Length: 336
Image (cartoon, rainbow, N blue to C red):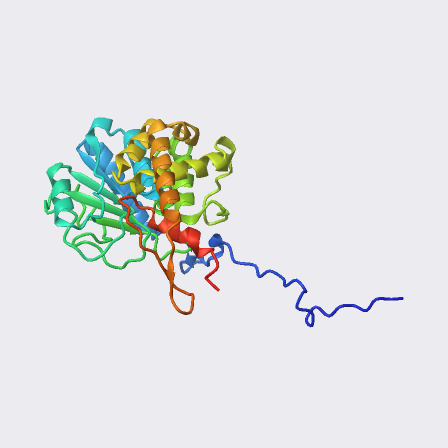
């Protein structure tokens, strides 16, 4: 006896075909009038950023790097540090300013703290942007802002501007932003693309930093398709597991009550691979501290709205574990 074919449309038990989601790099890139892809930022802004870094290194004067506290910002900062050193800047001339917990580079206290370090050049990375006073008040200080967060407004006198080739000083502080150039690059990826042509060692010494920062922001399932760079050599040298595990360690210090971001920064400066990062005792202890606090706070019972769509948690913790707990509960079913 022949069986009748089952009509999938009429059967509730029939498996529905899973909708395919576009990959991150599938976003349509910007192009110029000739059809050339414009990525990861405006070409003129990228060239000015390179000019700024070359001038900064050649000056041999004090430089201050101001990276954000997460893996993307810190990795971008170290890429800049290694680029400046490769271009001839003395390591002793390069300092770092890490913004305090709960603060912004636009706060008066942070601006005063940066100004007090008496740097000739300031490079701000991955800090986001908004209308604000100049990065510092000293008009002789030249600044470069590298970012990918959506914004069309920047600190006063920090605009994308033309370089007057007849002068040794930039007309205005420089900005290079990836926010309007899809697929939007992370700050570490944008920084890597800016710095890579400046010295032959950057690709080999900073490729893994670019990968860690990018995975830190975009996730570890990212497919590195064009216009993103070909990272096959990086992933041959450093396994994706090591890169992703290192990201977890680098993000742990910023979540601690102590806000020990300097530990992540110093670890990145003193290591040359994700594998080395994974054996760093300072980072391992900070991650253990965060895991313990997450476990302690995870059992906090949420209060749901009447429709079950909104959950509110009352958590008292000096550590930044709130988003981790929210993410865990996001996949939990609402009460019946």
